Length: 195
Image (cartoon, rainbow, N blue to C red; front, side, top):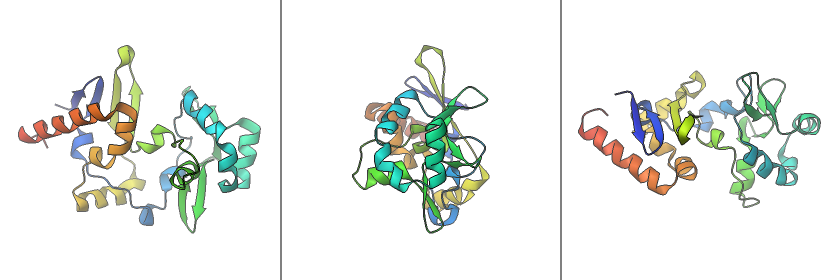
């Protein structure tokens, strides 16, 4: 049993089995500055973020502001997906630094109470990746990336399953009722010896 269905969501069993907890002191926010494309983003998220750009601008690098001025906050990648714009072929335009640690300017503004707009759900849910299927079905897979090895180690130390680490964004995306069903499913899987 590799795929588990909870409501209209199909999850790989790794979402239950994997242990995970970000450790910014070790990874320095590498998921925002590594890779060859921006983070997946929806049209609704683009519109919401464009409304708060004046709040974000002071936290963005001059290069990020130039990219936004020339191409906007998102572009279509080679696979045809909308993704956040990037700077110098890697950094998300919303990265901001405190010392050597990279933070998301959107998340920072939200935590400071300057906005209620969250960062894109694809970022908030990382390392989980969503895929939409016909009939309203959504697939969730755990995306393993070596830059997150310290998060895996930290999660194992804390005995924190991935789905519990991502409780808040999972509820934001799918709702409290769905998350309660997810927790019940995890208990059943444990009783069956699958976790």
